[in-house]
Length: 124
Image 1 (cartoon, rainbow, N blue to C red):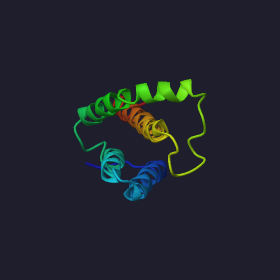
Image 2 (image 1 turned 180 degrees about the vertical axis):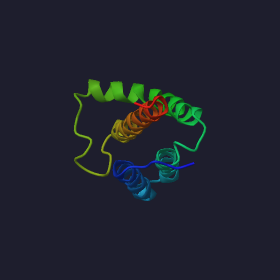
Image 3 (image 1 turned 45 degrees about the vertical axis):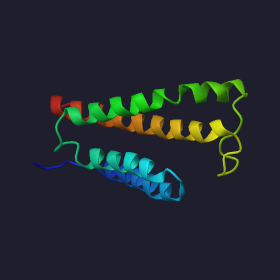
Image 4 (image 1 turned 90 degrees about the horizontal axis):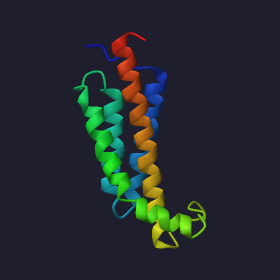
């Protein structure tokens, strides 16, 4: 089966691979590296893997994202202070907000590729 990958696919997969590589300086980096590299695999092999694989991962990441909602609420209550000023999180919720943001980006990318695969299947 031909993969039918575009330059955009390779670019986005490369960005997520870099995200995964940059996680290795974090104490729980291996978890995030796996999460980002899973996206790389899903992007590059989406036409070969079973159709439901992207949906399963989206649901898993949505469940993970939902666990960050209390931290996001704390961040909102604090007036949404900057989360990018320093790589060291000055308050406990900043790391959680960053991680939730990463999951949100992953979910958006996977939703994009789910739609793209479905469009290809329908010949659109």
